[in-house]
Length: 308
Image (cartoon, rainbow, N blue to C red; front, side):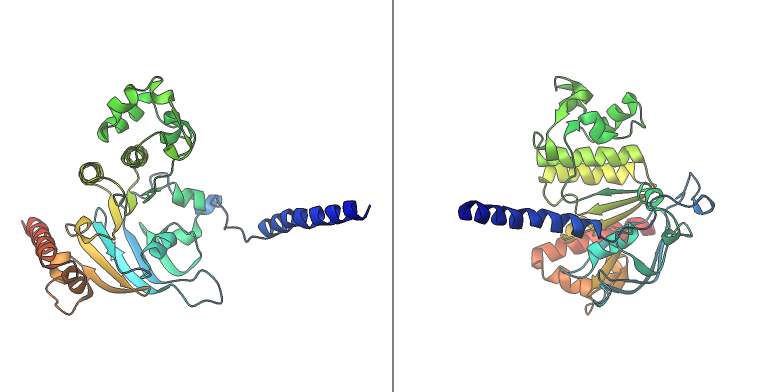
């Protein structure tokens, strides 16, 4: 009886851990309303242009902590391609969190003159496409990964796959669009998984696209394909690219340089490189003489094309 009692008390102690977890999860603070109130629902064509404005934006993850983003104010014009750079901890990912409202913010973030804090999260997030560094795929068919809510025709899906040069690979599968994908897309290469995410973004055809170093883990050939597809398919979209490698953003319309949650520089990379005391100039010089020269030439070539 004594042994049985000890075993039961130990079992009770173990099971109480599950109870504590359930209580903890049930007490998690919820996000704000997912759906907009009828009078605040954005127009069906919103955003029509893709203009983004930050006005004195602060972001903190916990109330008692200091802000991670501090007094950010800038304007991104429609169709601009913006590179976001900065050292680790500069606030690049936090800026994207603010756009998707993953964390509450102070100040105003306007997309096409509409304050995003006043609309539901479904209405906001469904209108912004993102291609993350780690491709997000789930177990199911290729069709469900591309179009989870069955909003598009098969012809649209095949066209998107053709745009990212995956059409032949999917046609070679036994069931085509109905072929099974393992959890995380483990039966596809890393490059192919990223291309599926790109095809998904092409289908949505949103006016705002966010790239979170989408080409960091792929081979140079796939990198070139992704960059070329984005350049052509999203020519009429506003594109924000978080970059850890400077060569991916040196041909951008503007580069936003961040440090410790604040905006330090925001202009065309060629103009920023004229300031030898600037942060971008310093970051370019740290890549080495040959790479720095190549980056400078890319920025200069891009700037001359704009002038023409």
